Amino acid sequence: MGDAERESRRKRLQSIMQTRKLERQDVADLLGVSIHTVHAWLKPETSKGSNVVPTWSIELLRYKLLFGALPDELDVDPKQ
Image (cartoon, rainbow, N blue to C red; front, top):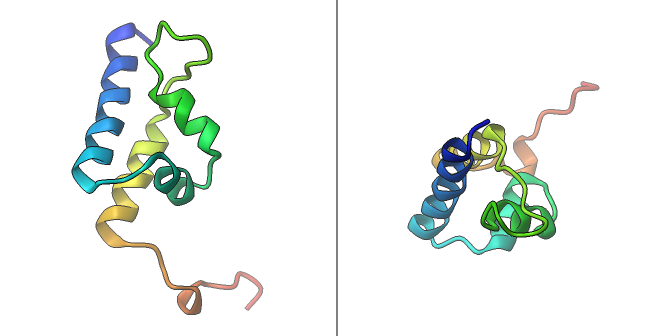
């Protein structure tokens, strides 16, 4: 992956967060990742401990924000 793609993903995540007024903990909770993971995603590439924002994370975040998460009573139990 090139530097441009890496930076594009980071900026996309930042844009979603800014537009929806999401804190880092909100993103972590929505995606089921640690706050430390979100911190690493948002660090500039040149910073120690930075990680690439995975494509799945942006897609899942957008989906959850668009459609909302299912309330617990609507969750499907795979055993039923």
